[in-house]
Length: 263
Image: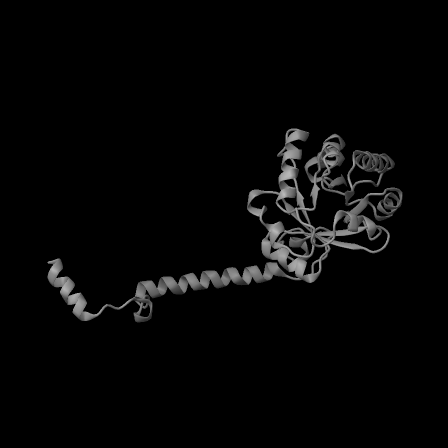
């Protein structure tokens, strides 16, 4: 575990003081760039190919997320959460139940919970759409928030909840509220790097803001790859590659002696 950047205590002290910027990444270079830019919080999934990223990031609060569906019990989740903390995380995202959150929190793991549109559970709330527009849904979200707070979570991601509803809940909970499409009154603003950098070629969520067009750049690079491969094939076919610059020479005397002895 490391304590560079904002600790959980630091983050909690910022509630109601200033907005916190949070980005979810998938590559080490994205995490490093986000930290260099001054990002407060950086997160990614705790999967083997990303387990090294936390220690490559300096100066930011790093969060590992437990993949939903990987853990069949609170004990399994706790074991993975502790491994993630050992790998350099300062907090853990977990979309499991308050009962599981309580087990993690009891052992001192700082946990971020999730309410509203929780993608792996979206069938319960009507699919990939805003949650909380009806009274029943609003009350259920508020009950979930209280349950997670009582379980010991220090923060809750609020995904695609009406902004005014999220604002009222933010005022009523001691947890940090993390907005993914839930308005400006939450304590933390959260985006996925792929949306922020414009890497998606298909649907862009309404709540996302795109600051660059990496998809176009990737398309350009793909065309350049194809062109380079075609040029290489043409050079191989014509004999233009390899030429003298790409080959190692041998002294003619040594070559002749080799031929004499090789028979």
